[in-house]
Length: 80
Ligand SMILES: [Zn+2]
View (tube, rainbow, N blue to C red):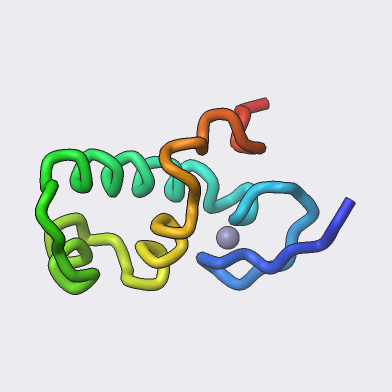
């Protein structure tokens, strides 16, 4: 067990996910939105543009970009 600090709300939590349990649902939804946007926009876009188009903050976009290509499903995001 490890105590992490949530990248979204700053709360401390004990879990393996990248954000706290309170933020997991919202984070998942935004990650899907982000992935869809990236898939439909093959040419390079700036974080600014992605943020404007998706409504996701640049901080979260930076974090999403750091994830390995769509491996979220197999990570610790399992819903239980
Ligand atoms: Zn949180």
